[in-house]
Length: 165
Image 1 (tube, rainbow, N blue to C red):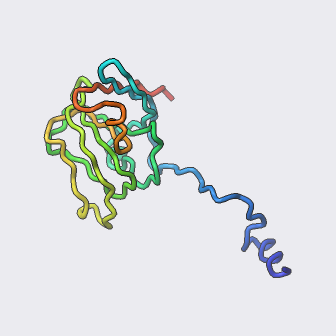
Image 2: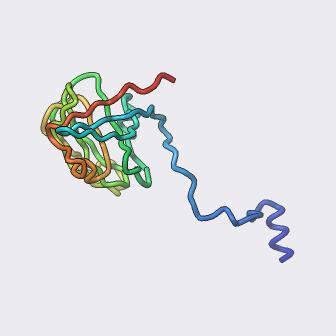
Protein backbone atom coordinates (compact mmCIF):
# COMPACT_ATOMS: atom_id res chain seq x y z
CA UNK A 1 0.00 0.00 0.00
CA UNK A 2 2.85 2.40 0.79
CA UNK A 3 4.41 1.69 -2.62
CA UNK A 4 1.10 2.43 -4.38
CA UNK A 5 0.67 5.72 -2.47
CA UNK A 6 4.26 6.75 -3.26
CA UNK A 7 3.83 5.91 -6.96
CA UNK A 8 0.59 7.89 -7.09
CA UNK A 9 2.19 10.90 -5.41
CA UNK A 10 5.18 10.64 -7.75
CA UNK A 11 2.80 10.79 -10.71
CA UNK A 12 3.51 7.26 -11.89
CA UNK A 13 0.01 5.99 -11.07
CA UNK A 14 -3.21 7.94 -11.32
CA UNK A 15 -4.50 9.09 -7.94
CA UNK A 16 -8.05 8.20 -8.83
CA UNK A 17 -9.21 5.43 -11.14
CA UNK A 18 -12.89 6.41 -11.04
CA UNK A 19 -12.77 8.22 -14.41
CA UNK A 20 -14.92 5.51 -15.97
CA UNK A 21 -14.26 3.60 -19.15
CA UNK A 22 -15.44 6.23 -21.60
CA UNK A 23 -12.77 7.29 -24.06
CA UNK A 24 -12.22 10.96 -24.79
CA UNK A 25 -14.26 12.22 -27.75
CA UNK A 26 -12.51 11.82 -31.08
CA UNK A 27 -11.08 15.03 -32.54
CA UNK A 28 -9.96 15.25 -36.16
CA UNK A 29 -6.43 16.53 -36.74
CA UNK A 30 -7.84 18.40 -39.76
CA UNK A 31 -10.35 21.20 -39.06
CA UNK A 32 -13.69 21.17 -40.89
CA UNK A 33 -16.61 23.61 -40.97
CA UNK A 34 -19.97 22.05 -40.16
CA UNK A 35 -23.36 22.75 -41.66
CA UNK A 36 -26.62 21.04 -42.52
CA UNK A 37 -27.32 19.01 -45.64
CA UNK A 38 -30.90 18.22 -46.57
CA UNK A 39 -31.65 15.14 -48.68
CA UNK A 40 -34.95 15.42 -50.56
CA UNK A 41 -36.72 12.44 -52.06
CA UNK A 42 -40.24 12.89 -53.35
CA UNK A 43 -42.16 14.66 -50.61
CA UNK A 44 -39.77 13.92 -47.75
CA UNK A 45 -36.69 15.77 -46.54
CA UNK A 46 -34.08 14.40 -44.13
CA UNK A 47 -31.36 16.51 -42.50
CA UNK A 48 -27.80 15.61 -41.66
CA UNK A 49 -25.12 17.46 -39.73
CA UNK A 50 -22.18 17.39 -42.13
CA UNK A 51 -18.58 18.42 -42.07
CA UNK A 52 -17.51 20.28 -45.20
CA UNK A 53 -14.37 19.23 -47.08
CA UNK A 54 -13.54 21.93 -49.60
CA UNK A 55 -9.73 22.14 -49.50
CA UNK A 56 -7.44 19.48 -50.98
CA UNK A 57 -6.15 18.63 -47.47
CA UNK A 58 -9.68 18.23 -46.10
CA UNK A 59 -10.80 16.13 -49.06
CA UNK A 60 -7.73 13.90 -48.80
CA UNK A 61 -8.19 13.31 -45.05
CA UNK A 62 -11.99 12.97 -45.15
CA UNK A 63 -13.38 10.60 -42.53
CA UNK A 64 -10.05 8.83 -41.94
CA UNK A 65 -9.30 7.44 -38.48
CA UNK A 66 -12.79 8.03 -37.04
CA UNK A 67 -13.85 5.22 -34.76
CA UNK A 68 -17.52 5.85 -35.66
CA UNK A 69 -19.86 8.27 -37.39
CA UNK A 70 -23.01 9.51 -35.68
CA UNK A 71 -26.15 8.21 -37.38
CA UNK A 72 -27.39 11.61 -38.56
CA UNK A 73 -23.95 12.87 -39.62
CA UNK A 74 -21.76 12.78 -42.68
CA UNK A 75 -19.24 14.66 -44.77
CA UNK A 76 -19.78 16.59 -47.96
CA UNK A 77 -16.95 17.06 -50.45
CA UNK A 78 -17.25 20.23 -52.54
CA UNK A 79 -15.33 21.07 -55.71
CA UNK A 80 -14.90 24.26 -57.77
CA UNK A 81 -15.25 22.38 -61.06
CA UNK A 82 -16.72 19.20 -62.45
CA UNK A 83 -14.83 16.02 -61.52
CA UNK A 84 -14.27 13.36 -64.18
CA UNK A 85 -15.97 9.94 -63.96
CA UNK A 86 -12.68 8.28 -62.94
CA UNK A 87 -11.95 10.70 -60.06
CA UNK A 88 -12.63 8.18 -57.34
CA UNK A 89 -12.44 7.88 -53.59
CA UNK A 90 -10.50 5.47 -51.40
CA UNK A 91 -11.09 4.29 -47.84
CA UNK A 92 -7.49 4.16 -46.59
CA UNK A 93 -7.48 4.44 -42.78
CA UNK A 94 -11.28 4.79 -42.76
CA UNK A 95 -12.89 2.51 -40.18
CA UNK A 96 -16.60 2.90 -40.94
CA UNK A 97 -18.47 1.33 -43.89
CA UNK A 98 -20.03 4.15 -45.86
CA UNK A 99 -22.32 5.04 -48.72
CA UNK A 100 -21.12 7.79 -51.02
CA UNK A 101 -23.54 9.78 -53.16
CA UNK A 102 -22.08 11.69 -56.09
CA UNK A 103 -24.03 14.80 -57.12
CA UNK A 104 -24.19 16.93 -60.26
CA UNK A 105 -24.10 20.74 -60.32
CA UNK A 106 -27.75 20.94 -59.17
CA UNK A 107 -27.21 18.63 -56.17
CA UNK A 108 -29.03 15.74 -57.83
CA UNK A 109 -27.58 12.36 -56.87
CA UNK A 110 -26.24 10.71 -60.04
CA UNK A 111 -24.55 7.66 -58.46
CA UNK A 112 -24.44 5.90 -55.07
CA UNK A 113 -21.68 3.47 -54.13
CA UNK A 114 -21.16 1.37 -51.03
CA UNK A 115 -17.56 1.63 -49.90
CA UNK A 116 -15.67 -0.55 -47.46
CA UNK A 117 -12.99 0.36 -44.90
CA UNK A 118 -9.46 -0.48 -46.00
CA UNK A 119 -6.96 -1.78 -43.46
CA UNK A 120 -3.98 -1.85 -45.84
CA UNK A 121 -0.80 -0.29 -44.48
CA UNK A 122 -0.27 1.76 -47.64
CA UNK A 123 -2.77 3.67 -49.77
CA UNK A 124 -1.77 1.64 -52.82
CA UNK A 125 -3.29 -1.45 -51.16
CA UNK A 126 -6.79 0.08 -51.13
CA UNK A 127 -9.29 0.01 -53.98
CA UNK A 128 -10.46 3.23 -55.58
CA UNK A 129 -14.21 3.70 -55.91
CA UNK A 130 -14.93 5.53 -59.17
CA UNK A 131 -18.46 6.77 -59.84
CA UNK A 132 -18.29 6.36 -63.63
CA UNK A 133 -20.13 9.68 -64.05
CA UNK A 134 -18.98 13.31 -63.78
CA UNK A 135 -19.82 15.02 -60.47
CA UNK A 136 -19.49 18.33 -58.61
CA UNK A 137 -19.80 17.12 -55.02
CA UNK A 138 -20.08 13.96 -52.95
CA UNK A 139 -21.78 13.05 -49.68
CA UNK A 140 -20.50 10.29 -47.39
CA UNK A 141 -22.90 8.84 -44.82
CA UNK A 142 -23.16 5.68 -42.75
CA UNK A 143 -23.82 2.53 -44.76
CA UNK A 144 -27.55 2.18 -45.58
CA UNK A 145 -28.56 5.65 -44.33
CA UNK A 146 -29.61 6.74 -47.81
CA UNK A 147 -31.58 3.56 -48.41
CA UNK A 148 -33.32 3.88 -45.03
CA UNK A 149 -34.45 7.40 -46.04
CA UNK A 150 -35.62 6.18 -49.44
CA UNK A 151 -32.92 8.30 -51.09
CA UNK A 152 -30.81 7.39 -54.09
CA UNK A 153 -30.20 8.42 -57.67
CA UNK A 154 -32.54 11.30 -58.50
CA UNK A 155 -32.76 12.57 -54.91
CA UNK A 156 -31.50 16.11 -54.35
CA UNK A 157 -28.97 17.20 -51.72
CA UNK A 158 -28.90 20.83 -50.59
CA UNK A 159 -25.94 21.94 -48.50
CA UNK A 160 -26.48 25.06 -46.44
CA UNK A 161 -23.71 27.65 -46.28
CA UNK A 162 -21.57 27.10 -43.16
CA UNK A 163 -21.90 29.94 -40.66
CA UNK A 164 -19.18 32.57 -40.93
CA UNK A 165 -16.76 32.25 -38.14
